[in-house]
Image (cartoon, rainbow, N blue to C red; front, side):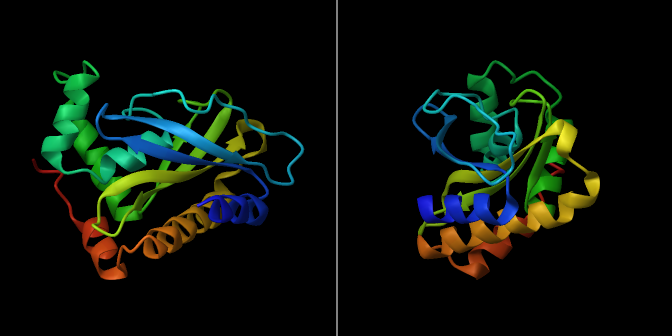
Length: 178
């Protein structure tokens, strides 16, 4: 995973993170960081449990869970009574596109783009993300950066044993009507 993280940072020139899902707590944490060539680096706390319902890494992970597990996560975060249909529409969009995008949400003054990771059983285990200083981000760079993070996440997931067929089925599964 660290090789993929370093490769993503080198390829994008940005700060990149490996985030891991903590299923017993239904939370996530940023586990590792790799810095690119850009002179402005993004910093965030590593190994600190965080909710899944905000930030691109958390939303990418949340989008890879099944609806009942999402409800359990949201209930644990105290968000069970919130706008469920709206969130499920957002998560369905992330599934369709293959990545999550957030601006100034979890990482202050930054844009984060993330894609979920999965293991040999097809379970979501985390996400790879790219963090870009908001002042240096252009919407024109989103297609390239999102492709880079999705390609690295797909490659790492496949090396962990997940198959391309299983990944594609999960990506297009649309449960926004639940």
